[in-house]
Image (cartoon, rainbow, N blue to C red; front, side, top):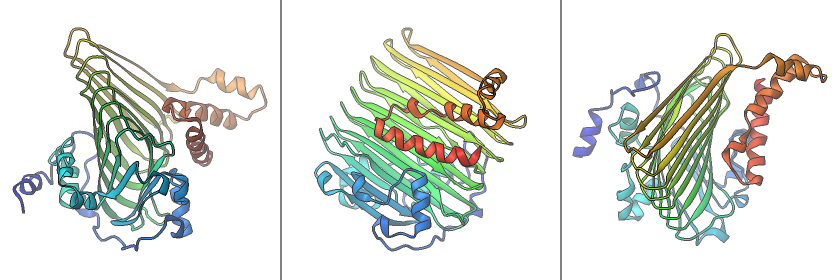
Length: 407
């Protein structure tokens, strides 16, 4: 074992600072082995679950596709017309192909941060490498699906996305499980490198299972005039999730936005947030969260804005809706200014559905349940994501389909 691995190995029992602590020994490392094939050739029940997280079987309707089942890479394909604009590999392939790739591997996230990063480092199960080539504008979204088909499996992926100078892309990634999976642990490491004048919009949808645990760890570094938009959605009940992505606006005039829509149900324990570090002039940041808590769910919505330059600005907003007397929403905003001119602000509002809104809709012929469902769907308006209209319609369809079953 290398010295680095030895250092990481010593942290294999180190709990995360936030969220429920998990006994990682109780999960299995034996996943089913799958043979590579086009996504459209996968069993119908797998395709149906993938569709629920925005991943389509027709690879031609996306500019590139990555699909992983358990520990097996099923597909990594780039549409012919985008072959000179995008590179899509597994991270294992990328490490073999490029010596320089080591300069991007575990550089934004410490491998010894907690037991989950240690687990991903020591037991790494592939993941995707996406590179948008210099000055290329990819007009059709890329997609990636990380799927678990084996009950009680521990899956650890490590993804790296590099947007070269002047490039632009939309990425949709969906994480989900087979209908027969009840429990398991997904650890996802994702490092983003957004170069000068590049723009990346990254939309991630999670559909796990009621006894499932997830521990994503992600970080982004932005160069001058770079832009990064991170959208996150979680609608299905799960046992627990904890994540706290961070973006470092290192270049002048770089901008980052974290947007989340979360629907907590059942006994879900959801601890999510985002941290923005503004390190140069004219950097801008935004963290917006819409949280809905029903049944016995607990949602912790965190946000941290750190201003390190006189000419930087950021805003944090959390709106929460309680649908049950037993549910909890805890908003935790934090602001840290390290330069006198840094402008940081926040606002938070948490409460129940206003009775007058229900009465207004009931007066127009809706039942009380229908009125409540309409208000909740309006609360989950994906326009906060700032997606192109075609993609926004796709995402809204997923929200509508999910909430229709939940409400």
